[in-house]
Image (cartoon, rainbow over all chains, first blue to last red; front, side, top):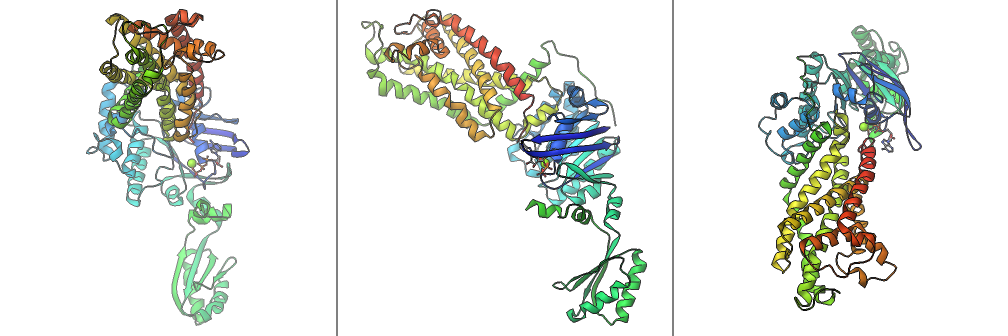
Length: 314
Length: 283
Ligand SMILES: Nc1ncnc2c1ncn2[C@@H]1O[C@H](COP(=O)(O)OP(=O)(O)OP(=O)(O)O)[C@@H](O)[C@H]1O
Ligand SMILES: [Mg+2]
């Protein structure tokens, strides 16, 4: 549904995209994950016809985004990184305006606006100016506006940035519903959890190029298997504990003295956990806490880019 | 996909005008909901009227005015009002500059550009709304003028022509203002950039002082300045004193020159602005 080949975009000396390839199958949620400045917004802008690439090509539903820009616009919806709705209009007026500008029949626009206002829980606020809306309400209206023409492909640039956890989960539900209806969604995010929750296929980009790609599970596997974390009772036993864990670990055992924590990469899931506890017991090490942790996308990120997504924001 | 989306036939007026009207409506609703903005765009020219009429009025002689019919200050007020009208509509361009810079900053231009709209739609709407807003401004200004002794002396029809010419001029400069606005990095810069070129332009004209009172090397510039021809046209149409009219063609044929200037400026700046719009994104 979305095909991009070798997209390059430069802003002066800054290379925002450096040969980006994407391939999004129809009816899936595709997650574009990357730290600040990775080139996510630039990629979305090229795919939504707002920006021309310096090199490379992109097609949405077989339509070239540069040469067939207007045809592409008819089948896409865009929710940009910042809520792009009119402050002074009411929620209903906003939706009707965008519907009119999609060149939809007036009666259809009216009906569809009401339907979307209800779906996004904005019916009560529908006739209030947006100046009275909270950030979450604005964001929901923004998403509603991009759905007015039932787009077959939806681009969401960091849709939940700035939302509280509850609004975020609500929005995830809406996105899941959309995909159930057959909409193809390309979603950018800095929240690893979000990509994990929503996206079947994840592409990690940094400095304008793809650095990893796959499902959330395959990406986690790339980082290595599970991690066994234990916290010891008595700091004096740290070395004995580390020694005991080396017998079950598949790689380097790291010792965090400040937290009395020892982390060991392992394979074999819970069986290994039992082995580990046995050998710690044999070494007479008192354990305060023990956990088997699957790697999160955070770990994926860290191992791929050398920094976490959050660190990068600082 | 739950159900197909119906399509709509092309309206008689065409999509460009249709989209323009939708966007103009949005901009005008904004004007109504933020009355402060409209209020200040009216208060500013009213203050100008009062300042010029009462502070400088007596000090600026109008050569060529008939000294027997009305003495000093009242002649100047008759002379001044069309100048204020001209200056006011010229400043309509600043609203377009700031408005577009704000739209870009808010990302709403990005959204408009992601829609299958006519590419001139947003700017047609913008310029149309900015010119329409001037109707109210000119109305309040005219009342102010009437209160201080300005009069419409040459019939209602000519007065209507004068107002239409002023609105056409407002529409023209709104295109120039739009073009500038699309280059602005933020609304604050737009606020300044939208105004800087207007001050020399309006003061290098016959709006407030007769051209004959200017240094001789400036006089040709002032005579060819479209604001001068606009102001002179309206003075003639309202039957207000014109001062001594220069020899240059624009001064001899002010209405024709004003119409030609507007047409040429739109022909230059509308395509420039639309071309810029097609690649504009928020930053
Ligand atoms: N209009 C512009 N002019 C100059 N540089 C730009 C412009 N837009 C983006 N850039 C640069 O291009 C790079 C990629 O920016 P982009 O906005 O695509 O990143 P992003 O992944 O969306 O980041 P964020 O998470 O902050 O939204 C950055 O280094 C940015 O500074
Ligand atoms: Mg971004």
